[in-house]
Length: 379
Image 1 (cartoon, rainbow, N blue to C red):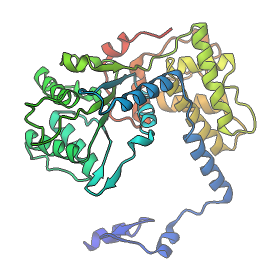
Image 2 (cartoon, rainbow, N blue to C red):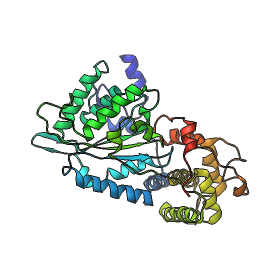
Image 3 (cartoon, rainbow, N blue to C red):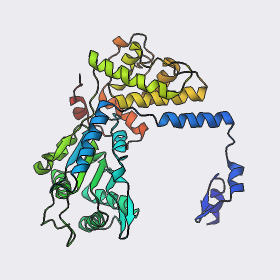
Image 4 (cartoon, helix red, strand yellow):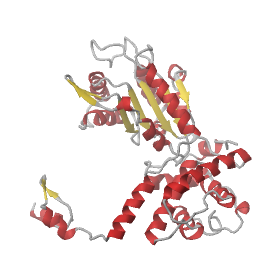
């Protein structure tokens, strides 16, 4: 134990055996930041919170709000599905949906009321690991992985009933597809279907529980629909709101230009960065394969670098070119921000964007070249 405590003593902010170190000890190891450093840190935080409501965001939010209004009025739930490629903005969109004030958890005289439960699908995702993740999200307690699948889900369903859960939101749901047998997928999807379409003979329904449907929000890679096809009854209750890429048509270029033009004044630089200039828009479309979520990520990363360097604006080569190369490591001949003529650059393969997904922090990337390359451009 003494060895552990000695090692912990070198950490600037440490809790040993549940006791927090005194302030004077923390201050001794704290990094001394100048006022300029603090201003830059605050600036980066402001940049990190920038968001722009695209057409797909507004349409999906409207559809989700309509689904919320139907809760309790229908004998069946609904399933809102958001399929999209890596880094397209699925997780950001789910976070936006959770801002609805009707979903704020609270406590009444009987205990916690949790209208919505959000999880990221574990990888690998089985019915058992999905149940463990849901239980943890509802109770902040971990069930033993040694429990049988049926016992885990019995506890999950009791918690859902007790906390009046109305919506389950699962990000990265495509994990249910990878490495699972057809029977395993069928069992998992059937279990979710019994939430959306309550079955009086469902063995997991708590005794005496009302036949109250639970709606689902699922996001994942474009081939997510393959998983849902395992059960036609669930599939027919699905509403698909895909995040599609912009192509290079005049209409798509206008949308990309408007998107980047809305971002620039939010960045706070004293000089213009020219993000909505025609040449820059073409470079952004190539660097993102048309996904505005990827554009936003690149702009924010470049803005962080520009702020750190004390630059007056985001530079194409020094900032955008640098962060793109830092992520993809493709060399100057394939970097959309370093080539002299963007029209000569060939399109990146979707599978190459898996690295961006890992850096954004959306979990372990799933490599399915056939599924990714089969996805067409939205023109």
